Image (spheres, rainbow, N blue to C red):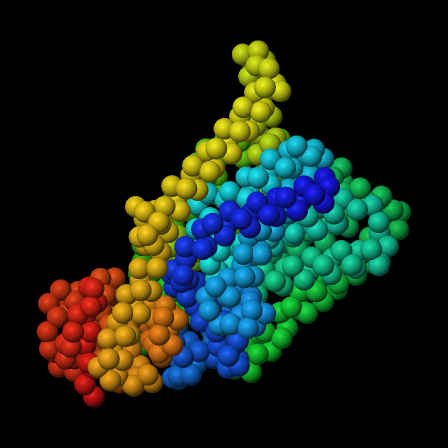
Length: 540
């Protein structure tokens, strides 16, 4: 593989993502809104603070609030970096780092494929598939971790494979390789909380390096202490790389929250339904409440999450039509250490997002985390296709060269078609002028303009469905509506000094009556409606 091949794949990848991103004027959904909002605060010099509360799991004292008490900060750092480099705080500037990451996915996937297959044509084919990422394409250019996770996943597997296959047992070589793997593991964790799993798998990789086997070419030595020393030195170097990335963030959390990891995520272990992510007070989410829901419900939740996550794996990660080829390719390369480690990590992610965090997992957690494995799946597709064509040669007397060209072109065509259909549904709508991606953002902009016209001060706090989304549309302090009825809403409003309630079609079940029949109630005065959003003034 020449550098020209990698450069061309990079240009194709960034061009495809940019064709979609140019029609996205806003982050598009809460996760991306939050990362952009965090980047804004950093770029504007406010540090890791926020003027929003999107959940109450860490029992926040008020605004401004320490940021990233649930989600990790790396995407916000990337967004801030783009804004600082561009000298602008626009969403377009915030996207720069994410577009770069999206462009790098294709050449790194090709590099991973080449490491596995040692075939240039297969590597280029894998890279082309990565440049047209199907269900993920709509999200690659916004302020979220999809492209970053793919980038880290490919890099991590490349490093892990080289560590296992290296014949060197000398300290400098092992230290540099494992230190680099530690850095990438740290970036995984800094991107998402479940990234901690990659640290655990990295430890396993280094331990296995000291166990000679058919797939581990380290020579067996009479003196076992040499291998033990290699493992220990590797673990030290690996941990040093990880801590170089994560130690500053852990120190910040310890100073702000009194714990190494942010407190919001741990409560998600005890959810009994997804809406409890927005529970108030947060003490409602606890182990006793979780256990009281009953073993039957606990099992049903995880069984349902397993089904949803498997569907996501087949439809999103396998892009439907690639599933058989991915499975054949994984089986063909089952002895390859990168494939073995990658599938072990995939099973770990499935376990975490099914058993530990079932509600968060099937509502998007597995979709996010699964992005790390996409480069591996694309990398093994050529082997799966070769196996299928070999069957055709034996059973149907196919011409191998001709069949390979036809099927590769057909698969690329299907990837393009799938990507277009998904992007149209998520971003464009029925025409390029619809821009359904920005509908929520535009509604918030309109509501904010109306509030300003009526003389509402810019410091007045609002309760809204998507607090990060409203903040990036208006720069107004905002809180997400808590799960519950009017009493819970008013309790939150009084504690945090909220003046207005913006009730949308997507609202807590306990507020359905208020939304469908918007009228004055004790503590709430209906003010006006705007495109399906009911605006109430909260009376103190």
